[in-house]
Image (cartoon, rainbow, N blue to C red; front, side):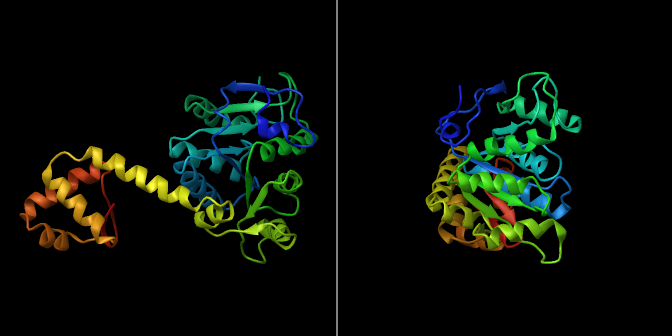
Length: 281
């Protein structure tokens, strides 16, 4: 069964072979792609963006290649999310072989590995360019991270633009070869992004983050175990900013030992979290 969003493109695949199970079509999908020869910083950006988008409910689509693709899949899995890998060869063989373990984790986490090519089809060079239309076609938007002039990610961006999908680009140093193609995309009209908020704003999904935060707060409230924890949670929430331990003790009027003990339990149970400024929801 060809997903509806993929049926809308000008040259949809005639059939799709699937390992695992394709997730429901009503869940938003976004692709993250880039060079195989990515920098550590580029891979960290891909991993973090994928993690954050997954936590907002997105499914991450990529190509299982080394570099940015791998980091995108990993970030999604770190958030315990669903990711789809699109291969340029038959599903009898995972390519590249170095990512066989990653492919196994994708399937274990209820994700999918798909291809338009029947089992036994080698990973020919042209297949990679052709499969890129599927990566973009499955997604409402494509995020490009580190794309040199020779990067296949540029073809994905071009397909996305032809398909009427958004193209987002992370900018980089003007003299770094990994960003030469990325900056060309920006000059040609792709949207420059520097944060998760940029993506949500351009997609008209600003409320998605607020809804997710409210959902998490509701889940956290259910984890509260006693009245002391409830009071600590209430004070931190009402402050609207991180509070240090002395301020929490002052506002709760509780014994320091009791506050320290309950805060430790609340952090373990992920009801609150700690940063350099103090404790926050």
